[in-house]
Image (cartoon, rainbow, N blue to C red; front, side, top):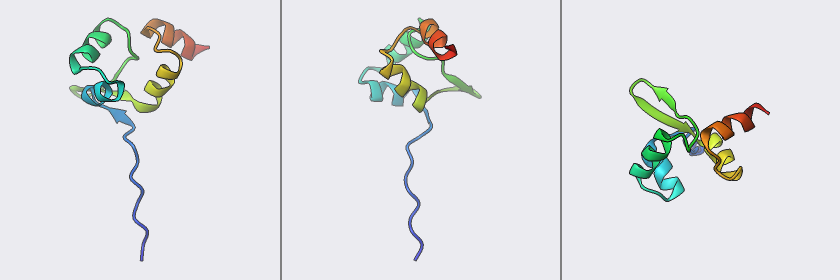
Length: 75
């Protein structure tokens, strides 16, 4: 009998999923995004998604503003 495939975590998260993961409201995530306080999301057609691994690294780095985060990624 074949082994069932493992359930993998999503690679990209919706704004709702990001809010839930960070323990804040959807409105707060949208405000953080508009003010440049979270990493830049990825546009997929009309929707925006955030990379799960990048969000994790961003949190580990102390959740710096987007411009500081982008500079840290370049180093």
